Image 1 (cartoon, rainbow, N blue to C red):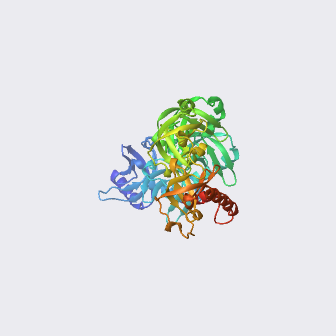
Image 2 (cartoon, rainbow, N blue to C red):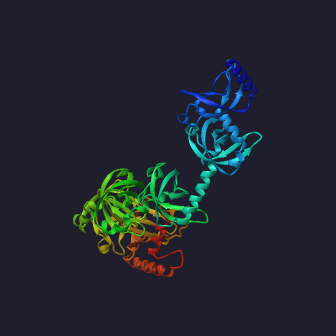
Image 3 (tube, rainbow, N blue to C red):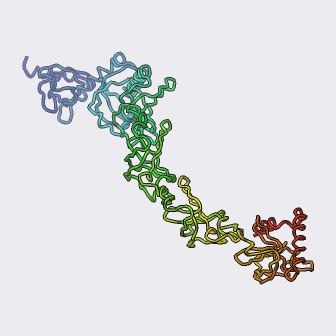
Length: 557
């Protein structure tokens, strides 16, 4: 048969080939990016190299089947596809090979909108939500990779297959979780990876499930945020603290994998020992000092200085500062250590008894006043207190402001010293002699005296006499006539002559009479006796005894 005839025959057999059919061919040439296949037509067919899994495995002369997409393109060359032929062949037995729910191995071919195209023999779709447990942000990393997939759905009419990798991962995780929950026990130490960090702790992936590592179980020391200890993706050894199999919850500890520094605390830091540390926190009542990781002591504000008046710790200390302190006490169960700073210095109060002996005369400034006395600063941080009862022999002082004001320089006598209570008692009146100790040398019954009206009350008038001694003129002792209102007769500051008719040593008070100023000795004696009778009878009436009258007057001031 002539070659022309052969050609005609080949052509006619070629023309019998139908577009869309699978035809046999022979590989005639393998180039870098394409493979040339002879399918018996006028021109050879070209197959892109990327349609083959591995071009290196092909050989010249090898027979393969291709799908004829078009008999001739514009140049008269046939268009064929090896990949589509494989897919067409695979589609025919896809259900037998990969029924729904089965597992198929496939290679990710390309990224498309909403997911990836995967070849499992035929092109299938992997939605982005099914790639992993957490949908990945970048899909490019998967292209070219080979994985196992679960066949979710097959639609033969539309030649459509949907795959999932996430479901496989979840299944494996469920199995791992089951195995983990079966084998895990409190006290075990396991490896994990920090999955994510929150304000209250961190979730640790134990390869199968997540466990919670609470912030309080991260360190024996003080941490304010979990990120100080851990970072995402880091591998850690954690101790299993608690397992709840019903709720599938696991609590983890990090500090439990190291020794608790509080176990041997009293041996390490005996009371009285000097320690070195760093200020980690200031609070209104003191400062926390870290003396080793996980061990903090509190210096109470009262233990900072012997003499300085510290109102807030920030006046003396700042966070981060290093310092020495003395251990004052340990409460091991409560994990508390009391520290002192002032114990590093000698206590000036130990010298107080020596510096301020009882009976010594001292001088100082009024620093502060309360209802019961005045505080006198003798040196920085050392105050003495003058009680109101020690301010005057003769006056009843109700408030220190009657005698003193803040900033006044004051002389006083040391009455008592108590270093343990850090108290010094002072007296002002002790600088002078008590006129009442020998009142007879000042006043006798019957004496005519000069006085100044210092105060008027409803029942009488107070007169200030010499030496600061007060006397009371009862309303009945002002005039022979009956007096309704004292202020009609007497005015404060008025000079008055009166007579002493009563001396009450116990109450340290004098009874005076203006009307008796011109009486004879007999009349005075009678008036004095009448005054006593009056006092005895009047304990229930408005004419009280002299002591009560004066107390009443004091209350009304």
